[in-house]
Image (cartoon, rainbow, N blue to C red):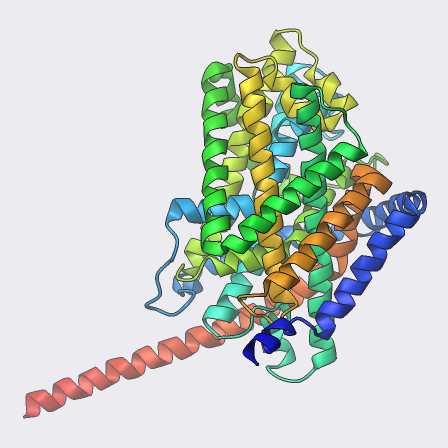
Length: 525
């Protein structure tokens, strides 16, 4: 009887409605790829032009909100009770954060983005000539900014909200339960289901975008190193291989599969970074990181809200707006997964760990790999910027081929991308299983396989039908409604954490008064 209940635990309206919507979207792309590509362009332009300002303002708001909670009197609140302690060591925790979050993005854009800006400078710093030292400087700090703490603001908030309501309020692992302080603890089933369905759809769109980018870059790497032809057939083979490996990881469980792969990911990333740092232009790299971080901090608030409506350009919508939308769409998955591995951390530890540590690693990665590429183009006559303009997916490998041990480093990079791909798919299906199984923290293998299959199919459909723009559009569509959900969750979290703090202080005061009374009684006796 218990097995039967477990088997059908995911057969609820959240699962069926979200599955049906995503399945129909994938079917549309498979049957009419041209129509999907055309509509993707129209929708992307409309959302980016109409709501771009909202994405910028909202993500800055989340950064301020997260830091407020971390450094306020609420920062010492421990997720899981006052006596709870973290399950995972710091290195493993950060490795799992990095692997389930934007490890894929950093590897994909670590060379491609700064070299794109180097070849086509952003239109905000005057008439900078492409390929010049001035272009290099603005390219690096803009790449740092686009991959900095803004990317992790929504991840941090969603993870914190879910962690708090699961471990402090004993709620379910559902986005709708983070709003109980606003919508009430019980009832309102249609509203709750709608919120969770929006979260599932946003997650699938964000996951499909990330997996699609990984597949494109792995294909580019295989072409650069082994002359494997680029195209649909190769990309489908990569997706099938990813599916098989993530199934093995899924069957191994969270504490074995994802944990071990995450440590492998971070270990490989550190090996690559250290190797390139020392066999590349070491002094130039360190100076580039130092100056880039200074420029990043100096321009932080101005860049957070800049738009290009006066120039009629598209740079902002092509870069920060796209990134912020991607992270918002990706945040239910990352937030849910981060919450699952963060019991025992204080609010302050959580915010600093999630919103600062992975972006710090990302900035170092971009400084090393992007800085090396810039150095080669500036001083050694290469044309990596030109190669990137022709095909973004080969950016990393175009840089590595100019280094000693280039082929070995390229093979390691392909391995890193693949393990990131597997851990992202594995952890995403785990989270989607929880979200569509009434918050069950141990979803069945069946539901994880269903979601893994659908995500893989959707990633292939988007790549085939609309390419990179289709992937970007999927993120924008998923992020817009979910950002409204997140704002309500902010209000709910702040309201609940204030009540929790007051209740904790009241209990502490009662305990203090009790001890004083006991001491007085003992003295009288």
